[in-house]
Length: 402
Ligand code: TGC
Ligand code: FAD
Image (tube, rainbow, N blue to C red; front, side):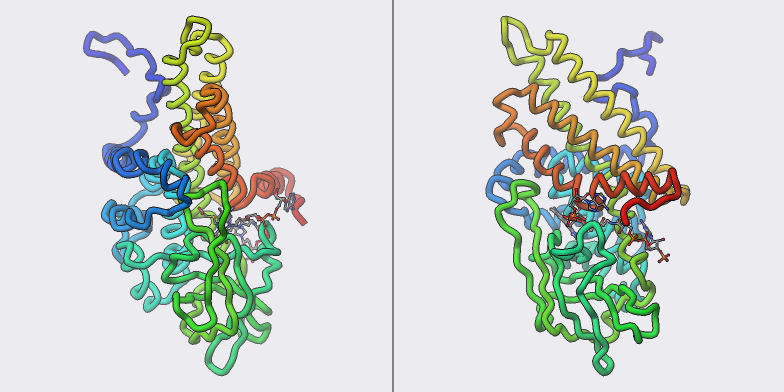
């Protein structure tokens, strides 16, 4: 980047490689708009929401006005943005809090995407415009208490009864569960359902359906500004048109996971960026032994390592985003990004915490909140171990998770 007198400007500590130059004007506009929203509406309040264990529902219409729900989907009131623009939005949201990004991921990439990719025209028309405008909230029920990494073992069943389906079982750890107007629920159908024997199918279960209830999971010390719930189904009778008609088998939910995992590739780096920026500022102003702690070589090494991984992570995210926009990304590429981004983001947050010393453990600063949040992000959407094994299989041809 040259200045007006032709001299190349010194690198910016907050964008060392000038990655900004790799974005289009439209992409920068999305990024800057979401960043302003996060700076104005989330950062000043998030410490309190986290402390109170409260998801700020009042933000839903504002997020909808920004066009962020299902923003990478086309039609039905969705913005039709690029994968890169969606990724940038996730990064900026998670620079505020992983819980807010989670809300947007689950709404757009899991619940809306499932309906968009596998629903009937009637289902799409009924739910997608309401979800895009924030008038209806969705959740995505795949995990069960006894089946997390191995959803193929699920016990929730959807049995035929006349023309209806009857749902029994339960889902666990479901983001937005307690506030959702519609749950996308994956259940095992009867062998004689006309599809693959005992196939997993997706069902739309509206809130208020008889026999369906939710219980929020309390006492979390991670993602406290996010609702996490158990879903319970006791003889829940659903009409035949509650099933998502266009997919059968685990491929359905796993395809949705690829969408949400892609958002995390970017999002987790937002949490890391906030921690890096906080630590950099603190290191320049905190005096010990008569010097700013940033004058000590050990502190500088920490800051440099944080900056290196943050910049590398963003380059990977952008590359994967461009691949996704070109239709060339595979689930294994997404695993590469999810594993690397979250692992490095968590390491950056932990390193930042040490730079702040005791101040790093309070909610006065964002660091321990981001650190605790990222412990969930490391686990959900496929644990770091599962993504390692997906990559191990891609390298060796041998699936080691069974
Ligand atoms: P496997 O036999 O490998 O695959 C079954 C079928 O699915 C296909 N497939 C995929 N399709 C699209 N995208 C993907 N990522 C896919 N991965 C697999 C596959 O080709 C096959 O298709 P077909 O047509 O041949 O039947 O399945 P498996 O049972 O061996 O499992 C593999 C494994 C372990 C990788 C998978 O079960 C897995 O990813 N486990 C992790 C579970 C997980 O990530 N759960 C997340 C729940 S949702 C969540 O956490 C939300 S948090 C959100 C938030 O708050 O932000
Ligand atoms: P387990 O699968 O029991 O794993 C425990 C440990 O064993 C992990 O370290 C794991 O990597 C390891 N392990 C398991 N199998 C293997 C193996 N084969 N090889 C090596 N190691 C292995 N789910 C949803 O469906 N929808 C949601 O909206 C949702 N939101 C969530 C929100 C939060 C805050 C959290 C924490 C979870 C959420 N989940 C959701 C669930 C999440 O997807 C699961 O927690 C995750 O898939 C892991 O399952 P588990 O917790 O049962 O761990």
